[in-house]
Length: 331
Ligand SMILES: Nc1ncnc2c1ncn2[C@@H]1O[C@H](COP(=O)(O)OP(=O)(O)O)[C@@H](O)[C@H]1O
Ligand SMILES: [Mg+2]
Image (cartoon, rainbow, N blue to C red; front, top):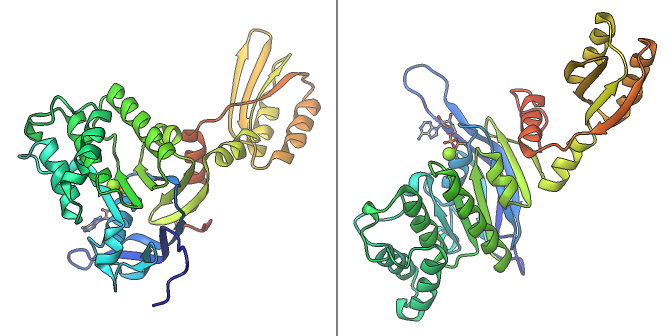
């Protein structure tokens, strides 16, 4: 097998995974023809509602489950034909911190995970101590993990995934079940980590705040398909040009409201004394002229037009709702 001089850290082509179901029910397609390429140093959010196929995708990359179809390469190594080579380059925190040994201490876990991958743990002892320190685990480093809080368990799991120093790190729902304070702290640590290393980090979550906070690029899965793959900034910008708030100096009659509702989406009309406030999203930016015409013809005067600051949650919901169940939008 000829290797490209520097192949992508992760290359997924046509990944499909179906699970059989009992009885005569048709199989579930958990992942449906997914293509994805990640380069060194990227921090990528894998976003999608529950059941979208995030965990299944990650498990296929790690070789924990066998894909129904498609190819996966980690640093150029085919996960199917060169499993050990591929897996050497990847590590993961799976949902619920299941990757750590709860009867061992954080220090023992970290040494174990470092040692597993052929590293001399003496040489790596300072690296382990540095990680424990950064994650606030130094003082609790010799207590069995089972005695630690949920947040600390999660941090131990992240430390164990990082200690191997692999090119590719998956964090599957890293903030699930954490209180908001611990979640914010962990996000800060992940941002710092992404800044300081050239490692490729994939954070899967169904929480947009986590992704918006930590990631530069976002891949949105819906029903096993990639429905968006873009920089977080661009995705937000796309919606910034479409989400508007208008203040009118008068009220609007029902017929005009009905015409508006047909031209835009998510229309809300609020009376504020003499004035009327409208909020809506345009299907395309140039449709703004049409909206202005409808209002003029209705006899109202527009006082102000402002663009709303969208957040990733709104963008996400739009992407999810705009794509049909057959995943017609594609990647
Ligand atoms: N081992 C399994 N057996 C049967 N169905 C599964 C299995 N694992 C996942 N699924 C199904 O595949 C779909 C995707 O699940 P998953 O990858 O866990 O989604 P996510 O991580 O995005 O919430 C869901 O419909 C889920 O019920
Ligand atoms: Mg999951």
